[in-house]
Length: 173
Image 1 (cartoon, rainbow, N blue to C red):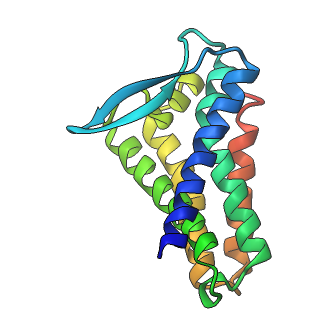
Image 2 (image 1 turned 135 degrees about the vertical axis):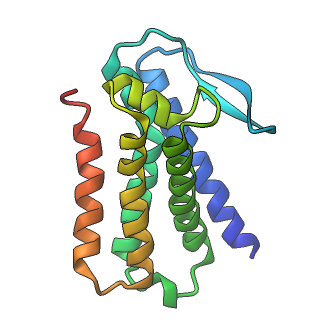
């Protein structure tokens, strides 16, 4: 079980590293901020306000992009992961799917700290936050389905299409 949790922790670190990478590329001055979600304390990596919309969207999306790339790599290289003894990879995939579901829930409910990724993405695109929540939820659900039903190719291609579509939103608002 410790190996599973190490995978989940690695996925969290990868998600945050995605944000930090683009914070650095865009000179966005990232900082750690103490935030809370309905009284539950945690932290958020935030950056200076007033970025151009593409930079804001990219920074806020980067964590999900890293999750998507990781999940895709895992499910492509290990399509039958459910039947393999790979607790580290299962921890990564579990974090990626469950974090996306949690972010989507917060986005649909429009709740949580103002620094939440779904809100920043929605503001950058001038979309309503539940639309972003749906974009985050679809590949998570499809990847969960792929884990349970690896022979279903439609789920793999649907997930990949949703992931690519989210990245392409950088091109046009």
